[in-house]
Image 1 (cartoon, helix red, strand yellow):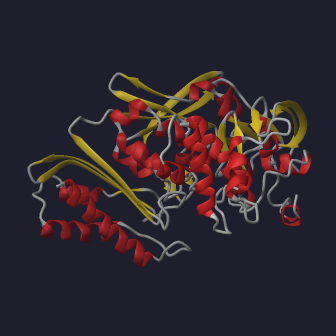
Image 2: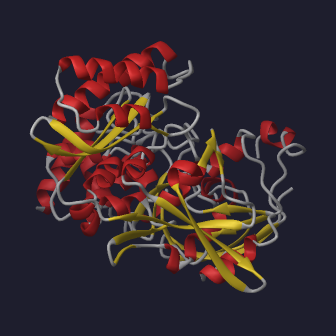
Image 3: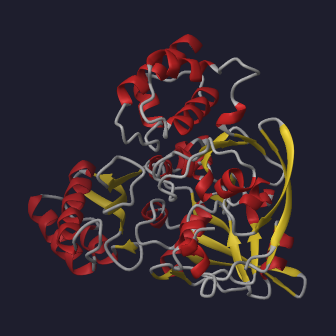
Length: 297
Length: 157
């Protein structure tokens, strides 16, 4: 313990209880009183608690040993990813590389291998950073989150679209007595093409200055079923729905792309921070939209 | 203050027991409680790789891992790599190539290399560079480090 950490003890008290459940039922029970901090990979929690951005609740609940929360599976026309599946597991997953390669691409750009080996997709979602690397890819996949809680001894689950899950930087719609158990999305149509790009001074191990993902079905010179998402340009990971609607079905040419850029500029609301200025983020978002549209058509 | 938890795990092939605060990092456990100072604290936020350890064979940043999560796991640090007095091939390659300046990044570099070579059947020089992207050498002695690593990778293949 350093002196600095000692002086923080009053405002940042450590957990008073610790449990490491092995089943989803035990995990849901452990958070049921709303007084738990959930530990998965720990790569964000360790840092955010150290600097006081997150304070521990009474009980630290380590969900890393819950087998039901790990792995990728196909159920009917859906893909289901357990919340405690690591980024490395996603990066190496054969089903995902066939069915949703854009998510594998995002995992490939995620930090470095030491962090990918520990960090989980559920943690990346619940951390709710506007710059979270998997989030634009999950947004264009129309992903939904599955939230589990224990109510009178039985498990109750609800699903909500990821678009509505983020309520602000580091804030989500998950209740204190719930835990994120899975992320689910329909297998994308075979003809849909998707791309993820991200910017940082280094190719990986970098918090994005701007990230972007697009999915669309190309027909001659127009895009259909357009899904467009950006990271680090707004308080939450953003589905650019107005820009999507504008592009939908129209013949792509230089003029149309510039009009789409104008609409995107009105949809985003980036900030100045240590990594980049708002001006540069706007510039980069425009460049990325042009690049995504030119590559697509 | 955090509650303390009893844990038991395998460290470099030996069973160890410890009583740790629930919010302690694995790095603090290794260095401050167990005296295993080969694992280095540098950035403390997962950017530099100096604290790389192998957890059940996978490389992780000990500074971002909770000590309580060591429970039941198999942890390998740089102290456990050699057998008796014989250096591991990767360690020997670093010595042979003089791939050490201040040495602070070396334990992390070596363990990350072990992870890469153990978990991939073959690695190109570019794969190795990409695989070491989260291990930083501030003496910027990368040339000799890559020479050493490429040697081991070639011998293995």
